[in-house]
Every structure is written in structure tokens, then in C-alpha cells.
Image (tube, rainbow, N blue to C red; front, side):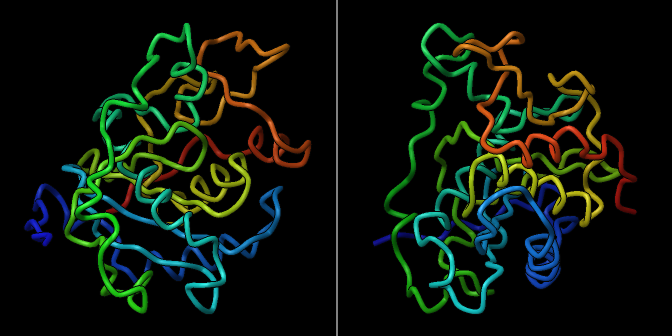
Length: 235
């Protein structure tokens, strides 16, 4: 039997509400994101890693890959867990660093999923206000695109994770979602633009920077390179 833990109040009231997350996700998924054009899952966690909202962009929970619901929560947990108030690391930035020989090799095994919380609940509530992940800290580490820390004018307040398309398109959708929510004023990061954007510098299996992520399509690469590097923080 699982017990729901009271979510943290560490700036948790600054996170978007479920409806704001869903509306923004639907709008972003409708754009050209360089991928398969599939419906998506999105999850929000607060600064202490508790899930605060889960939403999907399709008409029904079955319109998205079922496995991507959990992956979206893992991505949010990861981006929050390894970002700081003055330095952000996206899940996309972790790909090369966690491979054998990378400076963070083994990180992907460091925070296993709490299965007693992750796989419970009525599926009819998945992606709604009553999603069974809400209020739980499920953990899990994910090291490909789609997880980004969220920055309010008061600082780092948690993270968003999205899943359901190719890994590069997941990153693009997460980035545009964060911008739409007004929470993308990243203070610093490992990318050449000084933020947590995806670094597409892998050639012959090696990343020049050590923070690289594999490319998928030319269209997605072009979109990544055009993503805005600044946004105003939410008031």
C-alpha cells in the first residue's frame, strides 16, 4: 500500500496550474517540432521533486504512448534534481556525460524509480487533475531530451518533462512549453549560448563538448539552433 506524501511548499505555488500546463502543451504540440507529430505527455515537479501536475495533449490518455507518461515525470525529476538556482542542466545535456567514460557516468542509476508510487492509481485519472502521480516523489533519471528546469523571477521553482515524440522533438516541445509558461529565464548552462539548450555536436560517436546529444532529423536540428535563448521571467 502506498502513502501519499504532502508535496513541498517550496515555491510550489509558483508552478503553473494543471489547466495552464495542458493548454500550453496543446498549443505547442500543434507547432512544427521537427518530429513525428505525436501527442505528448507533460509533467511538472516542484523544487523538492514532488509531482504537481500531469497532462496530455491528445483527446484521450490513449492517444499518447502510455510509457511516456512515466518518462515525462522522470525527465522533470532529473532536470530539477541536477539544476541549481544559478546553473541549469537539461536532460538533453546529460546524454554524453552519462555514457561510459563521461564525467557523470553512472548518474542514470543514482535515483531509481519508487515503484510503490509510480505504478498505482486508476488509469482513468491519468493526465487529469486526479493523476495518481500528483503528490508523490517518484524519482527516476532520464538522460535524453525533454526535461528542463523552470525559472521564476524568485528563482528555480522546479522542472517540466515532456515525452511522446523523438528525443530532439521532446526537447523542442519542452523548450517552447517553458517559454510559453514564462519560466525560461535560464541563468547559465553548458550550451554554447550559455543556457541549457541541446548541444548537437556529436560526430563519429564523440561529443566535442562532452555535453552532446544525438541528432534525429535535419528539421529538428534547425529548430534547436533557432530556439530563443532569452525569455522574461514570470511575475
